[in-house]
Image 1 (cartoon, rainbow, N blue to C red):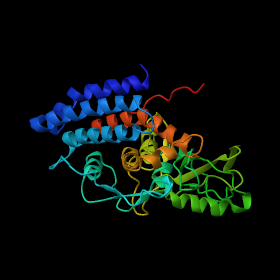
Image 2: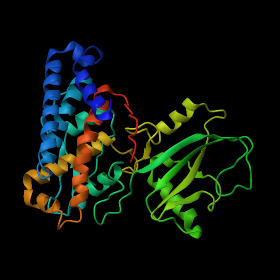
Image 3: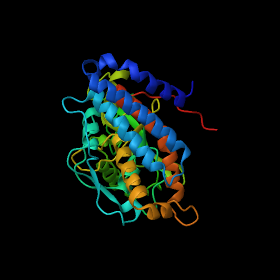
Image 4: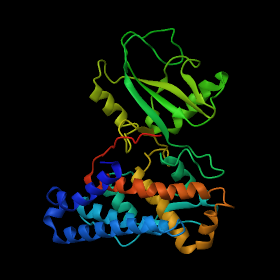
Length: 349
């Protein structure tokens, strides 16, 4: 069974399997709303498959809203319905990457964030920032943007005691073990003389890298993968010596959770310095809300952005809308079940 089929089956199964495990058990109103909302989600997603990118954001966003209503019906304490978006576009006349979306009042965005355990964003955030924060989109940024992207992280086993890590391998700290990770970065490898400053700046951009340092020297820790892509080895002092596999998993789950596929972890940038970013589900929510507003109220601007012969962003926007058809059902299933559901990564041919 492939991943798409498994997700579709899982979503259908939720219609009965969640009844006795959630607030649906004690409320007929919640149960009826849950069932109707998921039916509408399925139909909106099917509609999104057959329409062009000019219309697709509308189906995707409103399907996601209905899935969100199913999540709040099942999991929200107290008030679980909503009748507002809870979001506002500040100026739709900007270039697409510069359009900013902000929370407004209490609505669907806030209710679903709370029901799924997502950090709420309080400030306005540009679509370029939201786009780059999503693992599916970070490597194809919109034209002219340089917002901090999501990056791949490969967790490794704890390193033996007797290696200091840090900026030099010359002095060992015998009593300390380290937890290691490799991070892949989509840019040119920094020159040797600038690597210390680069690492300090890089670590500051990701909450998940707090406390990290280079594993080895500035020369040894970096490796060019190809032009415009390199890896860097990082480490943290282990919270305790003799960490087991489960301990290491827990260590990295708090910093770069597995996302969609087994062992695939990503560091995601925060939109606000003191907060973790919204979950990928709610980040996609921000993006699709904004695209749907453009499609509805600025249709000429939206179709111009999709003009493959004139717009430098057209191919990327088409890709994002295609990706959403696959990503959104997966994230909705995780939101309904309240647990990660990683899949096996498809083989690339």
